[in-house]
Image (cartoon, rainbow, N blue to C red; front, side, top):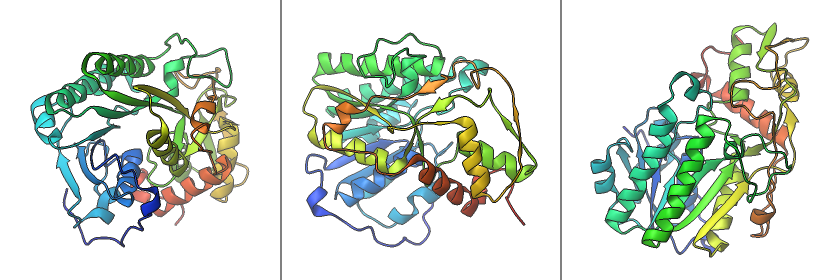
Length: 341
């Protein structure tokens, strides 16, 4: 990564500092969520090493940290165990966010979730073991629940897998817990709903804006549009992650991270169209109760365990969707096509 001029300085709240994290290692640290984790670490006066191959991560997400001695950037692949192990030295906490983020990708390429999620996580754990790093935060997913029958879905729900993506994340969770037993690790596993907000670059809102930028008259909607989904603003999500890390003391900690509310996909489309100033857009659903094979028609997580740490989601879903649309429009390089003139 080549840095341009450093951005404005980051405000530091010393009272909220995570004194237990001195040097953090962040896989996928140039990505949507990972870069926000790096921001928070810097705010909390922790040094951070970003380990990212920049296949989907973006250098501009880290520009505000250019020139800082406490932020190091390593351009490398987590599947390169030798390089990963070397870079892991002298850290005390790992935030493992690198992954294949395309839930649909496993249909066309059945190896991608195995390699980018499960094997990559094993590499991270092996590098930690080799270098004596014993604490890990892992970004899992609500997809591990498959199609649950209980809503809101609690962490102790016994899932049946419906996607290779969800299965790979569930395998990662199991492997992490086994390393906790074998090697005395401490883990913080977070099962995320869809996160949205600044730096968001894939998913339903991105797809809608991209499609409408190319043709504002009509919009393809995957499935019948009645899928019900919970979404969470990235700042609320990061707050939840750090609230749990600060307060949870178990060896193996699992938390759902989501919003109390949900919207249908058609309701999301309505908000996107309204924010873009588009009227009378014709929706063209592709049909069926799922957007793709492995898609869950209803996602709503029970977050009581995380709320017990003092956390609450503060941003209404509609407000976060509108903020996300504005961000995408301000950053047209994220989309194939430019909305407007």
